[in-house]
Image (cartoon, rainbow over all chains, first blue to last red; front, side, top):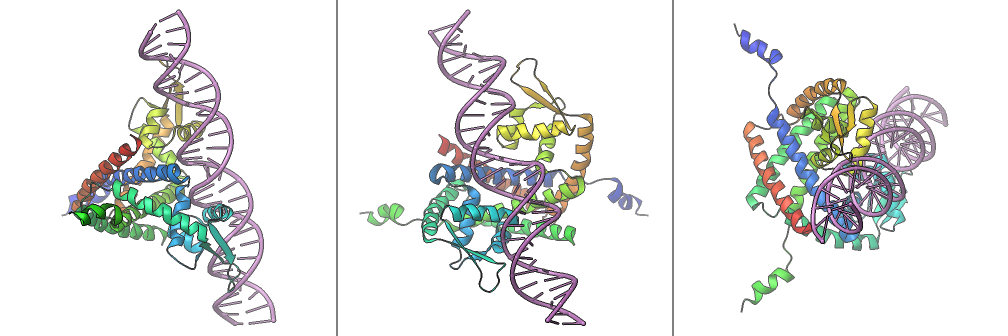
Length: 164
Length: 164
DNA sequence: GGCAATCATTTTATACTTAAAGTAATTTGG
DNA sequence: CCAAATTACTTTAAGTATAAAATGATTGCC
């Protein structure tokens, strides 16, 4: 007959409490660490996290990237990047020029001064992160990396299914 | 002589690449999921994530909480809560009254309508989260919970050490 | 060649967020 | 009891963030 198992799916909602708790814990961890990094950046270098993040993207490449690239990598909106870049050009950290090949495109790079300053911040930042994760064993770190990779893939799949 | 091991700590910086990569992955996962939840909340209920989160805090208690309580639980600033509550009272989701015992204190609660609406949103939200984490096995979930608890403790210890 | 579609970026409107300073109420130590 | 410290909240200024519409440039296709 299969009546029970057939009706179960529609009539008895499953309990997803574990997943909800997992999500909240993930969010708590990130918020906690992000807040800590934000405080230290402000305290030590008087810089905001978004600016640091943007400079970090640019430090990875020697010849600069387009605003769209930055936007995708940082997973933020285009308009957001426009404003951030504006202020960083203003303060002399970034250099921006229109592409020769395509005049819609703006290529931004770290200025020499910007790169020097970023490197200084990044070196300390690395120590902070090491300290924040200091109680995890190398095995913990590996295991977390693996599980978060799986989580990321699962979330991307779910997002893709919705958009499709 | 111990010269090598003595100088090592100061002269040779350790490599913390693994921790940095772990942090970036953690951040990516959270941003991805947060963005997905944000999109769905807007699409489906035309509500923002902060509003949903605030209502979620209030749904847990029958008799309301103070703004400070909410601020602590949500890990956001006081001023932030002030503005959020203002808009939610405006829209009829929240009820706010000054405490009899202490006139500095504002107690906020979900209105009946607010609670009904929140419960509806929460029910769908639970399904979204379940779907987003859908590819994780129960064992994965348990293991992640354990490792994130350890991460949280480590981060809190580090933050406390800085502030102290 | 020219027009439609696409693409990169900017603009706009609104909302969220923080840090820091300010206001008002309560508690505490003398 | 009263001044000082603390507490709860609000306000302010600056910055961050999104979605959606607008602008300007390029590409594809007939």
